[in-house]
Length: 289
Image 1 (spheres, one colour):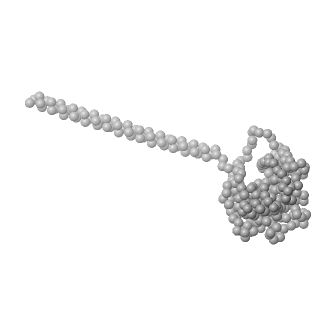
Image 2: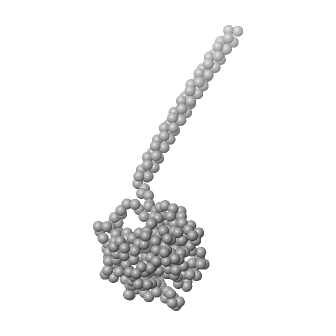
Image 3: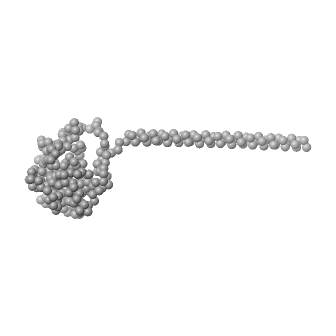
C-alpha cells in the first residue's frame, strides 16, 4: 500500500515537470515568433525606406523630355514658297519644325508647322506637292496651301487630308502684297486659318504626341564631329548653308552667301537642330513636279 502511494507521487511529479517543460517550450516558441515578426517588420520598413530613397534619387536624376506638342492646339502645316521673289519669307522662326524638300526646277519648297501661335503674317504661301502630305499627316496637322499639283490634289482627296486651299478662299484670308511679284506674294495668318478650319468642320485640337522630343537643358556633345558650317546641296544650282553661332547656340541660314532674315521682323532665320535625310528623287512628267 505504501509503495503504491509512492509511485502515485512520482507520477504526479513527472506530470508537473512535463507541463512546466511544455510551458517553457511554448514560451520560447512564442518569443522566437515575435522576434521573427519584429525582424520582418523592421526589414520591410528598411526595404520600403530604401525603395523610397532609390525612387527619390531616380526622380531627381531623370530629366523629363519636353513635348513640342504641349497644349491642345492642333498643328497647322503651311506650304511656303522658296524661290525668286519669295525670299525673304516671314514666319519661319515661329515654326516648331520646317521641312525642306526639292521640287521642280531644281529648287525647294518649305512646309512650316505651327502650334499654339497667333501670327499676323505668314508666307508667301505656295501650292501643294504630294510628297509633303506624309509629314503633314504624321504631325496631325491642318494642311494649308495655295493651289496644288495633280498628284497632291488626288492624294488629298484620297487620304481625306484636312486641307485649306487658299485659291478657294477670299482675298481677306489669303491676300497679295505689292512689295513682291506674283505668284510669290500671297500671305495669310493663323486666325484666318483657324476660322476657315472651323467653318469646314475640321478638328482644331489634338492630343497626339509629338513626332520629335527635346530635352529641356542644354546638351554639350562630347563625341562626334563638329558641325560648324553645314552645306546642303539640294541640286547643282540650289545650295543652302547653315553656320553655327556660338553666342546664340543656333544655326543661321544662308541662301548661297546671303544671310536670310525675316521679311517683316528682319530677324535672322535660324534653327536649333538640323536633320538631313538622303533620298533619291526624279522628275514627274506632269508639268507640276
